[in-house]
Length: 214
Image 1 (cartoon, rainbow, N blue to C red):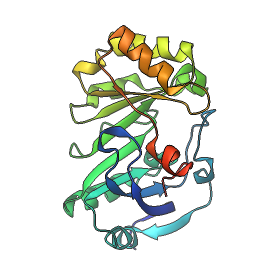
Image 2 (image 1 turned 90 degrees about the horizontal axis):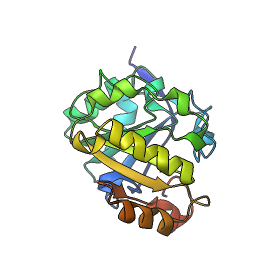
Image 3 (image 1 turned 90 degrees about the vertical axis):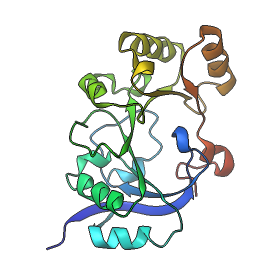
C-alpha cells in the first residue's frame, strides 16, 4: 500500500514569509499539531483534512509551474511520513522548505531541505516546548523565526539570539504578531539595537488579509 499523509490543503500562492518571500510557491499543509499557540492563524489545520497518497500529493504539486514547495501545517513533522514526502519532492528537483515549530526533532531531515524553525516566544504560550538542541542541526541555508507580540518577547528573542549565537549559524527572522505589535515599532528596535536579523511581515496578510496567502 502506498504511503499516505493527512492533508489539510494544497494551494498555490506567493510565499509570504522567510527568505523566498514573494516567490510563487506550492504549499502542502499537513493536518495536525501538538502545540496550541495563542496567536495561531491556522487552527483549522488541527483536525480534519483528507488522506492522500504520496503519489497523489506529487501529482497535485506538479500542476503548478514553480520549483518552490513549502511543507507546512499545523506541525508537519507530527506525521512521520512527512520526511518521505520531502525526499520525493527533492528527487523531482523542487526547492523544498519546511515550516516547523521547533518542538519536534529535526535531526533526521534531509540536509537539502531548508528548515524554517519557529522558536516559540513567551507570548505564544508554548515557550516550554522549544527543543534548543535542534539548533545544532541548523545550517546557513536554514532560518530561525521569532514571532514577537510585545516587549517581553523582543527582549527574550534578543537573549536567545545572543546566547546561541544564532546569526553565526543560520538566518534569523524577527516578525511582529499582526494586531499586537506595530511593524514599525519592531523595525525601529531592530535598528536601534543593531541586530543581525531580517525583519519580516506576513506579506499574504497585507495582500489578501488572510492566513493562507491565496
